[in-house]
Every structure is written in C-alpha cells, then in structure tokens.
Image (cartoon, rainbow, N blue to C red; front, side, top):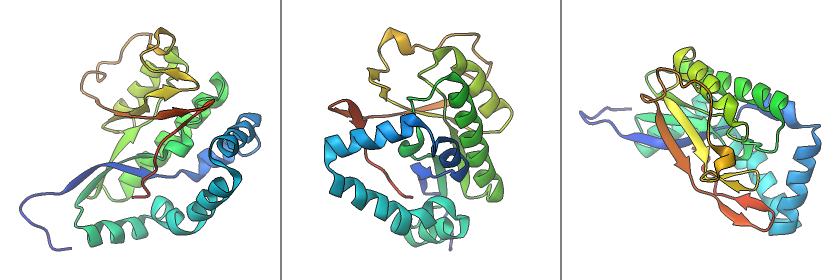
Length: 199
C-alpha cells in the first residue's frame, strides 16, 4: 500500500483465537450461552450469525494475509487488535478463565509479532475474577508487549460499575501506562448483546 505521511489507525479491530474456542467447545457455560442467545434473538438469527462467522468473517478474523489485504483496501495503516467479544466468556470459572486469558493474549501477541508494522495488541482480562486482573494485565503488557486492555461494560450479568467487579490486588507498574478500551454492551433478557466488527 502507498503510505501517506499521516497514519490511519483503527483502534477497534477484532481477531478470533482458535485456541480459545477449543477450550470452551465442550463447556456447559458455552452451551448455556448459545441457549440464551436463541431465547433472546431467535434460532434463525443465531444460525445466521454462526453461518456468517464461519464464512464471511472467519478469514479476516484468523488469517493475517486476509486481514492485511482488507486493511490495505480500506486505507488502514495500523490496527489495534483485540479478541472478538464472542470470546469474552465471562461465565468461566477461575481456572478456565485463566487459561482463556493466557490463550487469548498469546494469540493476539502472536498476530502482532507476525506484522509489528501493522498491528498493536490489546489484552483481555477475566474481569469476572477481579483479583486476577492485575496479574493478567501485568503479564500481557510487561511480558507479551500488548499496549492495553479491552473490557466490556457487562460481565456475566453485572455492570462493571458494580463493586463485585472492581479489580483488586497489587497493580503492576505498567497499569497506568496501559490504554483501557471499554466496550459497551446492552443487556437483553438474561444475557448481554453487543456488535461484532470482523476487521
């Protein structure tokens, strides 16, 4: 792509990490999440979105060359990438949540390492387990080189303003230097719905 003197940066782009999907595929929480989606939006809508994910969205969410080609077509020089909101899985218990965060952040870091001229990474944290957040963010920013974190306004039925979701524990030195992107979510019934951007 021909570069201008000014960079065009997309600060809200998503990636799908296959390793995260492998960790949740047989989980009861994942089955319940799909059931809630069907109750809230209807079976046809859920099936339509699943079909789009498998066909239209998946290449741009998982393949570096497809993503870069789409960026070039849109005139995007750099993307700040984070996991898809469909991979937040805030229902996960502590042990699974820790594994999900490790897999997700490693996947984002891997994408960024493949093309550091085009990508910067945003971490995920298990905000439903506030005492884990500081350590997860410290590792993501300090060890993996991610630039910040993206969180949702809704966490497993709670708003992030709820005292129960307040992060605790010793804050890493890079906590303040981290960019925090707070992604809104609208509550529908028992679950929360948000939009998804494939690039």
